[in-house]
Image (cartoon, rainbow, N blue to C red; front, top):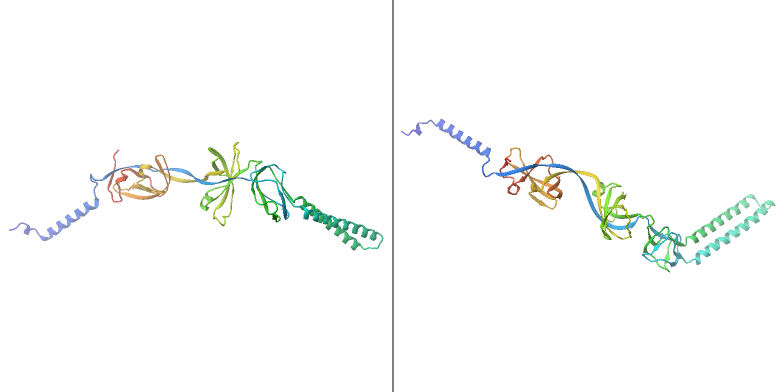
Length: 352
């Protein structure tokens, strides 16, 4: 008789179930074998980082002035050209005075007539031949005429343009013989008497939010490639330029004994006052990188499996990589063996 047949069926079923359960448990535990990738980890450190922003612009005088005539007229003479250096009070341009002088003469004659009228009515009033109201009326007319003469003489005085300070003519807008309206710019001058030099440029809204008035700046000029000039943010626009959508900044530049001229091309590095906390990892931990995006691996709590994490790179400096985001609550990253890893790789930590 076959011995197998003598074994009860219930015992065979129970043994089979026990064997299957044992196989499932062994498969689920996935023991680390000799084929597991050996990895090493290093701790993540942290540092405070100040963002550096780079922009460019042209050097200009802080006291840039648009020079114009107070009244309209025909330009008689322009005495300067672009690039000319001028001194304070120097005559730069004049209007044709024919019409202006005539207006002054007309106002003077009106004032003389009002004076005679006032004297005549005053005598009549003293003789009781004129009323007080008549006297007061001619006195008012005399005051109006005198003020008209004062206005005409004032306009005559400002029918010329003089330099408000020492500086350089950077643009000549109008020429002799042109008809100019009151207040229209004729010349643009950069004042250089106080060495107040600035660079103006636009920044994005994100950069504007991270900057403060008084923040330090480093400026390099193509004219002096070996020198670095110090500067500070002097002004910050409170509204965006409607055409460019940027916010204008003005950085004051210290000449440091150098000779400056309007229009010098400048590169500006701005150091923001706001510090950002960055994670620092060894460069070996960076498994992949594309521009500012990278991937690193971390060891899971079971010490057998790994997780692939996407990170944002701030910068790479020597053998360290600064990470802006992606390593929150991560204490260590894998540095050795990263080139052999995928998310399904079984690993074992190195013993030394």
